[in-house]
Amino acid sequence: MDAGRARSLLYPLGGALLLSGVAGTIYYYLTKKDEDEIKLVNIKANQWSTVKVQVPLSSVGLVIGRHGSNIKLIQERTNTKINFSDEEVDGHRTCIIRGSEENITVAQKLVIKAINDQPVIETTEMLVPIIAVGRIIGRNGDVVRNISHSSGAKVIVEREEDRATTQCPEDMRRIILKGSKEQIEAARSLLLEKVIEEEQMRQQIHASATNMSMRARGRHSPQENYVSQSLMNSSPHQEALSSASSDRFIEAYVSAVDSASHFWLQVVSPRSVQLDKLVTEMTEYYEIEENRELHKLDKINIDSIVAAKFPHDDSWYRGQVCSYEHNETDPSQSLVTVYYVDFGDSETIRVDTVCELRTDFLKLNFQAVECFLANVEPESVQGDEATDVFEELTYAAQWKVVMVKVVGYQQAGDKTIPCVQIIDTNGPTDIDVAEELMRRTTTQITNGVTSMPSSSEP
Image (tube, rainbow, N blue to C red; front, side, top):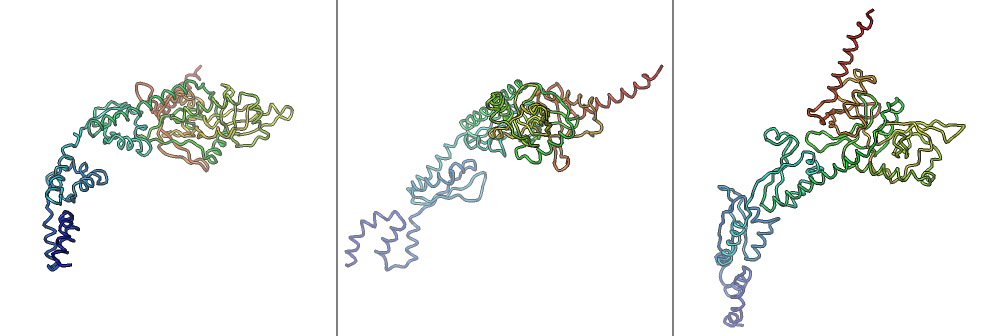
């Protein structure tokens, strides 16, 4: 085939494919193969042009898109190559577009359109109840990150240490929202959902506390305290004192008291509602005689977890067997001392009010948390009078919330017990329970000492 014949066959194909670098190279090679390679490269390069577009830093991410999706789409539609320079000049980065003049013109318009279509970024703030902050932040910040991701807005929860510089009310926390108007509204709606969820949960907790009866304030014997230690060491189901708030304070009830420096807490949380439901279900189940017969204990094992009736309200609770006193004359009158694992108190009850615990009633963690009072010397608050003052200050077994914070730990045998600070926030001013306890105890001792001489006078 002669050169003229080849040109006549390839010319239409070459003209059609000349737009692409590869096709242009093939056509050129077949028709101009007698020229050097350097000239070929120069001619190919001359088919491309370059345009630079200055993009504001605030728009770079939008132009590029998530994982480069926008830039890839523009490149595919316009048959161009686009990249950004690394340097920042006067708040801009340079977008470099390469391709044919016709294609880069289209690509340039698309980049400029992406910049102009960027939504106006606004910054606003909202106030939320401080009690809802933990729910909004979530464990390790998971919830607030999901809200930000779902809405597209940047969500910043004011830190505790920054509150002093703002005029935010003490019971509220400021949240800063950044994004487009639509993004901010979406984030605001999600945040309000969390506030409503917290309020609904607190209403349920309050209803549960209202339904719970006043429990007897029996004092513990050393043996009963030891049994509590055994439970703490052996059980993997013990509730822990932990807080997601920056100040580390936890809402809790004082559920049982051994002395003014040794007591049990229940953490106020959704588990409070679960416990109320558990007690209701257990009571309904074990009040049926057939069920009690089905779960009758053939043998009483010390330290075993059982279902036990509380004699002061006739409800059934989870308990641990502390001791057993067999009655040879009438075995049904045998006595069992039970430590109630969700409250911390103990009672001695008849054996026929103790049953095997149904296994599904073990799903909830044991709610009673044994604690020591921080910032007091136990020797200085001994005796029933000091214990009475402590019960009064902490609303013991009355299901009224106090604020507690773990400030240390104390070794007791082979277990570690948290030492907590307790603050009563129910009145017009906050009361540090340890400080008030010491003040009242000191006053009582002082009054007792000063009155002694006068009582001995004739």
